[in-house]
Image 1 (spheres, rainbow, N blue to C red):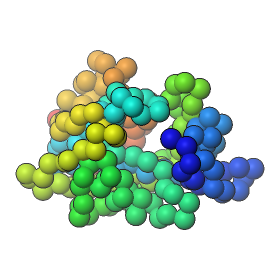
Image 2: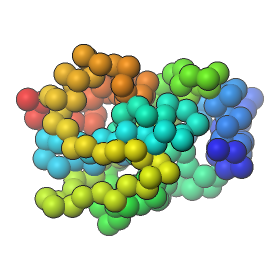
Image 3: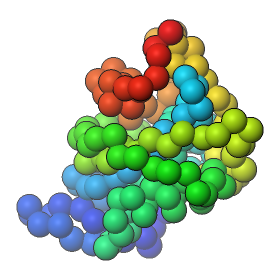
Length: 177
């Protein structure tokens, strides 16, 4: 996707840069990741096959980049609505992380991520946007970790990084059994 200006660090200064250019150049930039929980289950999505990077891979509930001038919390709520059709959930910032990952096709994510957690009430089901999401699944944390260990190629690079290094932030209040 081109045309969307997102903040990125260029020469040590935050500037608006085209989203595709940010990934082509591997520029460090802000991002948000949302994990919707229901007890010990997390809402996962399989990225739509038409996505410009990591199509068809499984990942967290949703993630994106704030637009220029957009607050991270507002961005997380916007993307949860756009990708999953979910609105009105209380988003809690769980922490911040930074990572760099090859997302294939000559593209690199170098993200400074605000991680948000939301608790979904029983019975709430997403209405995914088919342009963004191919499938959804509620996965128990233990099931997710086991599947990720057995079949890492089915998951986005950032999901692998989150589970290897930052799951204590994401699942701090959920049992890992």
